[in-house]
Image 1 (cartoon, rainbow over the protein chains, first blue to last red):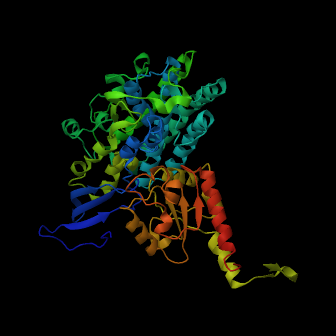
Image 2 (cartoon, rainbow over the protein chains, first blue to last red):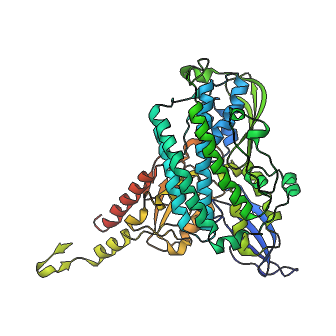
Length: 377
Length: 154
């Protein structure tokens, strides 16, 4: 059972406090064992594994095409990005590249989902800091993205839209019209949400100068994504090692040199603006042609065999998401391993929150953007 | 309930209590996995759950009547879930949201997942789906309200 009783002070005069796994601001089932000296946090030990669903092992029991649903449920707010990550590896192993049209469609969907994921983060971060209003605005915008997803693939959140060799459903004119309609009205709404955060003095007081992450430390711990870019390191897999058609699209990597909580907030909002830029370009550039590689027939998908080992990396909304896949010539993978960005980002928390006030612990752990389907897998 | 002459409403005490309970179900903020995001969505502006009297998600189990088990329950989490359920005051209700919670769902081949939360706590309403849409969960809450209103009739 969980020990929720406050223990007696130890030799240093520190008190151990248990936070989670049921806690409104641990974003799921994170449990933190915190040692406190008065109100100052001295030591933190994250306890993970409350959502361990052994997805990697189940993927090894399934056909290559069936494993996709477990990737949807890893980073469950950014399912499209996970699908892109898995298919980069699986298609390399099986030798079935997606046609050009499918690649552009994937870029559009992945960027739409990146916006949705960041909106969920922003809303939840507002709740962490006691701001209820941005939550509603963020979720209204997110619903608009999910409505597009429902129209394209029939599912809201766990989309299962992409497939080995392409995508399941083609885009039609109405979908493209809906996406353009969304990208036209979204920037103004985004600025409203943005100003509801930054014009709030309490928000600024709780983020500015708190949770300083030095770039050297971030690189040592393997932190990636917006966390790393907020420390001033210009690293994005979409630029460093372009996959799909990201090298044909003009966009910037948002970087902040502030290194604190506010920097991570600003980087994520700038990423949403860049995503809109990418979608606007990509929608217009989608070429005609097949959306599905004829080599991968839908009815014969379970007979695909792969041999060798591949490692593919992609940029999800949390950071660098990579998949390592080994095939032994059979219809099922021999080994599948996931490098999840949330787990690496969580490892920085004991360093970040050391010697801060306990109230700041929530403000810091919120900026990590943890999703526990991905941490525990 | 009966309406008498002169605008007088007569009812039994049980009926009045049930009516009150069913229209102020306060859920516990208890997100486990993917379904938790859809549970957050019913709270948001589009599908406002406060229309049905459940607007306040309480963070403490001692102030809530309804536990929405949203997401896969692992063997490590099950004792904690049971403890939270025990801390809730009577009368308390449980909604099992999503197929993972109902019977293990896509993870039922695994070793670490509890095959159905009804092995841990008694469940009132099952909402299938992976994840269920917010509309489905709203329907689940309406079903639970109907169940509460008919408790003495059964």
